[in-house]
Length: 275
Image (cartoon, rainbow, N blue to C red; front, side, top):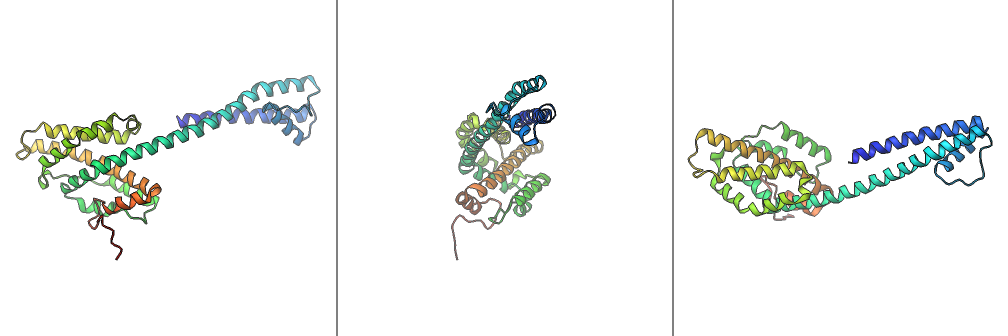
């Protein structure tokens, strides 16, 4: 939507500029106006101000002014309307983004951080993620971009034997109502990545619930479940990193706590120790 508004604004500006140049050059040659007077008269005519201190004398000049009025007024109003629309849409988008981040914060506070901790217990390559995701106050925008690129390059591996799939299933089942409320939220539906995360989490829960025995799994079935965990794990980490970037930028006190409970920092501790 924003891109369409920008394209429309550029189109209106191009037409308005072309008409303005036509008016300036035409009035200079047809009505023998000076450059300043031609610019002044063209602008006040196209803006529908029309003080009447300058007016065309020739028939050709009058026709040119009519063209400026008919074409210029429409394009001028189009420019004003497009600029206004862009600012309104930008404000609405900012408001939607704030609401989305509030919902994302609720998700990580109530479920996401706990789910990350359970996934990291199953990750034999967690040491590499410790290096990539040890977020700090000193991180700049470039550091978050580099971390995101590192995640895209990272080969996610899950070994379900390292943890308790039954406990993971119970945890997901307890959070079913929260997941349902989140996925029904219309704000979430506008954020494709977060929606995909919720969908993957729901699917993982359903896969686990449809296993009678999670301790004695066939090798092929275990690999299938590990693939579902990897899908959810990667989406969860990427969303966590995006949320951390948002907190650092706009909410320092929330970012402080998020760093102190960072599941990828082995030294993380929620207790503030100033010594």
